[in-house]
Image (cartoon, rainbow, N blue to C red):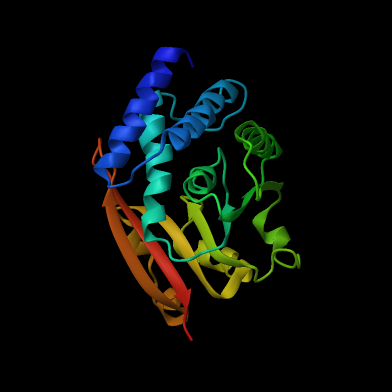
Length: 219
């Protein structure tokens, strides 16, 4: 990505974030621009994203990822299931540097990319792990350790809940990032086990509806 697309990416990122009431520092914008540049470069070799336009990458990947930070509580330890090109985990980490983050993906090539970006951005307390999610359920390093489990379009809600639950600490929450039809995935079985909160936001330019579903275990 040459200088002009990077400038456009940065402008789009800052303008769109401002529209959502999110203020980015120049340092945060710079880190996200490096991530975007590497995403586009690696995407020519491995399939990280179907979105190739820098402005759409700014909105659909980065702005969409950081929008959810506004809805977080005091989470300290987050796992991003099916992180792919690093979304939403890496932008969330950039926004909340004190957050400890684990990125999981079943594609070794994607995990190699994630590790590369983490090194380039000099991020600390974040790791990328190559595994199927199910294979980590009995791993004592991850079992019941996370106060936030998040995914973006990983799978339908009930499937995500069953995959996420073994990672959840006693007072942790599951965050499912969905499109406008996400409410249709909220089943009686999910509501029986979890307290539900939902938050709605719109992407600033294309005005796509987004739904964040937060599930906390009933006490």
